[in-house]
Length: 539
Image (cartoon, rainbow, N blue to C red; front, side, top):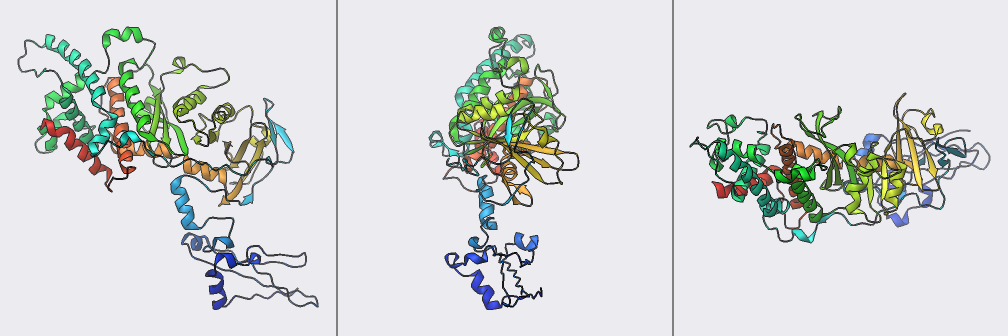
C-alpha cells in the first residue's frame, strides 16, 4: 500500500481552530478505520500541551486498490473542547484543581485481572469488571466551605481572633493562674522585689500578643534575655511587660482547678481539657466545611514527661503529642481535632480499629450526604468505608495489606506505573493497585469512583482525586510551622496551649480571607495587626 502524507493548509487550520464547537464535524474527533487501512497520527509534545497551545496533526493515506485513495483524518486541539472530549482544557483543569475536585473525565481503561471473580483471605468477593448499575463517579453537590453567621459580628482583625479565644475562656485561665500566683506569694513574702500581683484578662491578652509576635519573628526558641535586649529585641516586648513578668506568667499559667483533678483522673487531658474543648467548639461553630475533608496526623513537638507522648520517626520533631486533624481541602481550615491519649483511653467498638475510630470521631460533626473524606493507610479500611457510607460520606485513601485484599492484586506483577483495579458489588467499593517501582505497590480504596480510567500521564482518576485532596492537613501543618509560638517547656499542658495558639492564628487568617469584606493582606501583616490590638492596652 502506498502511503502519502498531506498537511492541512493555513486557512484550513484556522477554520478548524476557530470554528464554533457546535459546528465541529464528529469525524474529526475519532477517525473511522477499516481493516485494510492504517492511521498515522503525529504525537503532540507535552511542552506544547503545558503551554496551552493548539496543535493539529493530520495524516492521510492512500489505498492500493482501484477505488482510489481513502483519506483518514485525526485532529487534536486544546482550544475547542469538543475536539478532545477525554481531557479538560488546561485553563478549566487548573480552576478545577483549585476547587479540590475532579470532573468525571473518561480516559483509557486500566488493567484488569484474568479471573472474573477473586476473593480475599476473609472471603470478600471482588469482580473483574465494574458494576454496570453504578455511574463512573459520584459528583458531590455540596456548596464550598465558608464562614457561618456567627462571624458576622466581627469587623476588625482582632475580633476574628477573639472569636476563638474569647473573654470567657481567658477569664477561666486567669482564675486558675491567680491561684498558682497566690501560692507563690506565700513562698516569696520576704522578697519585696518579686512582682507577684494577680493577672487580669488585659494582661493575659498582652502575654498572648507577645507569643504571637515571637511567632512572627521566629523568636520562639530565643531566650527571654535576648528578646528583651535593647539592641537585638523588639521594642514591643519591653513596652508590654518586663522580662521577669513574662517569665513568671509562663511559670504560673494554669488551665484547670488542680484541687479537683483527682476526680478527673481517667481523663489524661484533664489539665487543659476545658480550654481545648472550648476552642475546638469555636472552630466547628465558626466555619462550615466544603464537600471534601482530609483526616491526618500532626505532631506537636514535646520532649518532656507526658503520659501520652508519641514517637513518630518520619516527623521532623520525632517526639511529641499526636493530634488527629480534620481540614477542609479548599481552604485548609482546621475544622476539628482530637488528641491521641493512648490506646487504653479510647473505647473501640467491635469490628473497628483504633484508626477507624479516630477518623469517625473528628468527622462526626460534619456528616452530610455527599461529603468525601480522604485518609492515609493508618485510617483506611473497609469497615471505615461502610461506617461512613451509612452517614452518606464517601471515602478515598491509601490502604495497607489487609485480609480482604486478594492475592491476585497484591502479588500481580505489573509494568512500573501501571494500575489494576477490582470491584466489590456488595459494598460498592473499588480497590486499585499501582506498581510504583519494582518492589513497591500502592493500593487505594475508594467508594466514590466506580470505573477508574487513566486520565493524565498513566494516573487514574482515583489517583488524581487522592493527590488533590490529601494535602489539606500537610498545608495546614506548613502554615503552623511558619508561625510557630511553641517555646521550650517541661509542662505538656503549656506546650499544648502554645499549639492551640498556633491553630487559632492559622484558622483566624483563613477565616478572614474567606469573609466578603476582607482585603488582600499577607498573613504576617494580619498577625501584626492582632499583636498591636492585644498589646496596646498594656503599653
